Image 1 (cartoon, rainbow, N blue to C red):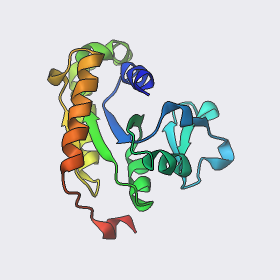
Image 2: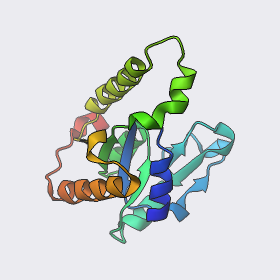
Image 3: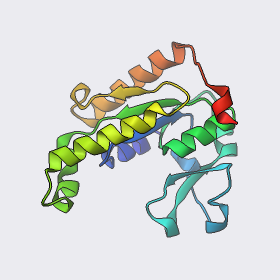
Amino acid sequence: CYRKAIKIIKDINHPSHCLFTPLPSRRRELIQATERNDKSVFLLDASTPEQALGISLQSIQDVISQDKHCLLELGLSSVEGLLRQGIYPIVINIRPKNKKHKKLKKLLTGRGEDGVMQEVCQADEQQLETLPLLYHTLESSTWSCTEDLLLAIRNVIHSQQKALLWVELERLQ
């Protein structure tokens, strides 16, 4: 589980809303085009439509029953879908390191690259504010390597598990 988490974390090249819900990486599956609109399937990476990876609601529920945690990178719509299914995830927004954006900066020639990245981060945080539950932001200054990031994530999970959860139920219907 942690090896996959490390791989996913290394692949983060944009601000990410990481969902910490019990799911081992072996439960990720290729999602057929006919299943992609199914509300019980959550896409992990919709950037490659022909090879979309996803996780089924049943797989999520199976692992929750084992009381384990793992990292998933899901969009806000998937988080809201989980809430509608009665699954209350811990949502963590991981602010990216500047060095992680070299590829993106090459694509954004002609504009102030740092300004563009800041705009993307702010837009993502505004979207997070629309969620009917709280989220936690890990600033890029709190971690310097993958091991530090995993430790920070574990600490957030530990603290968030103890917190009371307030959900705006009327927004989920």
